[in-house]
Image 1 (spheres, rainbow, N blue to C red):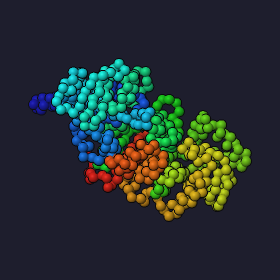
Image 2 (cartoon, rainbow, N blue to C red):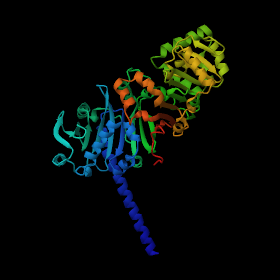
Image 3 (cartoon, helix red, strand yellow):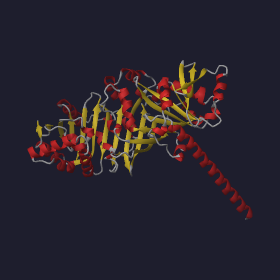
Image 4 (cartoon, helix red, strand yellow):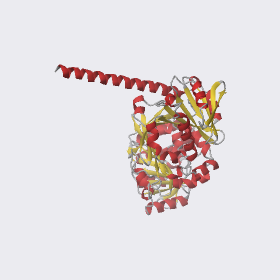
Length: 531
């Protein structure tokens, strides 16, 4: 009995010791990771975090996912940095097990470059790099320099024939980039004078994840402006206006990248249009079953309480620059027709509405209704009818008033009521085209690859964006800056080998549960299993 008690005590003590050591390691790791993240300039659009550990590199060694995501040139650059620096025998002990942050930064010269940031152990010093530079056949030339008064290095990588610029920041943090402009900006960046953009995931969550993704929604706009010809390009526009941050963890599959986590609004007052969906319950997404097979991308909105949504939308619009125009339009309709749209429409609105862009550049609004015949009666008295169920709005910006900023592109649209759905377009030909799609069931859900992709998504959400890259290619050819389109079209491996991507927000307490997914085409993915 005494022996059993002694063994129990010893086991308990060992467990306690392991627990203390484990959490001490987590706290230390988290401390260094926080130090590294705060040195990243806050103009970063997104940050990808992973651990500099052989296990991470082994898992992705045979995967085509990152090769297609990064493209061959970027993959070659990161591989060279991994082999020559991060996993170099001379440097390995200083960086092994450290968290690495790869951040994207739009540049003025129509480019988007990355910054690599990592903490080094306290034993690291400039003498280590001097030792490395003296090694024969090390594949690089290391030259000490300064960037605006801060110590740094220029590392010429022989195989790539490129210079990699490195700066030694405070608290043993090193930042490096192939862009000298980014490093110069990094040298001048002082987190103590700037607002922090990203918040690290909790230590325990990070320790159980292969990799993490951090996103600043409002910083997506400079990224989009770099890629597309028009600064007002509508892709993910509503997401870009959301004053929030996302922190997601990777769930790895052989043919798909899936990140799950949360998106939270910053404490800056109004949460904008997307904030209206935060007070709603997630809704099963069925409207996407009606999107045409030519869909390039769409944004689908879902509300559990349409009346509450309409009330909060009216309050949001009354506090915006759109307030005066909104009031004038509603007053004019009421005066000329005797109908109060803001009272009648909410009673007829269903749970879902969406804006779809096809590869022909068609814009289609699809709104689920509780009673199509009653809405048709309402529209007949306020619109110009061309047939029993088809017509055109005679007052400006009515869809925006009733459904929000996402429908601002329908100024005075044509419409058709099909069963319990309101269809909005900007031309009569688009109405005819969608009617043919609806009648003959030419839907996206019936095309090859969609259902395989859809099976990876959450069944319910409040806001869901989806892009199908093959259908979007024609739009990109017209709308992208030439250098970016050529990269998309010609790079192999590259993004065109992905079937599609999706970003979903589902209301959860005071934040959004967030799901991001990218899946390769079935003929591109060669890995049968999933980790």
